[in-house]
Length: 294
Image (cartoon, rainbow, N blue to C red; front, side, top):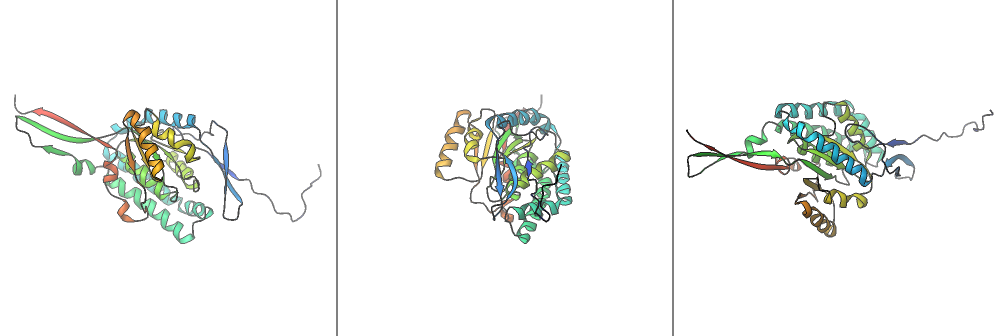
């Protein structure tokens, strides 16, 4: 067959199709829909899955199946696993910087975001065996009993990640949720999704059990209602939205009395955005009475 390519003609690169991450695997969206992610010049840099409601339901099933086992893991082990994620992210630092640059982030800003993400994972890894000591208590009672309160994970957490912070904002919400024994399903930034799927590759190669973290990509307008209304979600975190979105999420979440955590207008690059109360947000208080003596 004759070669019809003109000599010197510029080759068209094959745009990578970024898959979603469910149950420790990388399936294509069941909807078979994608959207083209473009750079500032209008050139296609990747094809991104438009996750469907069924993808979300599958992710919730995976999260629910993994959550109980993850909650039983020791605090030490959960901390070590988060530290391992940080180690692996450090090893792929240049890849994440390059992906942020592809999405319009300046070189220096991209380097700072990746470094801050690594440091944030280490920060929350350090809280794994400490938050119980800070937030648990022995309560005074007027009877012959001990009364003490401890924290337990709320279960499955749905996360609508920040739109403007494709890596740091995502990790700043996932890390405190899972270090406390929850499983989660996160919807990545619509305009900056590349690092989210690459982060899923890091998770896949780390010691995080399959299903503990699930990451979807797609249009927020199509999935916000499902995140808020699904009856097997125990808490929802959303990081963007106007007053109308706030109201819609609150109403949808009320059907199963899920916890709603609004984290808008936060500068995730600021150290003030990392604190143990982010872990506390997705915990339930269990109070136990125990008699003294016989």
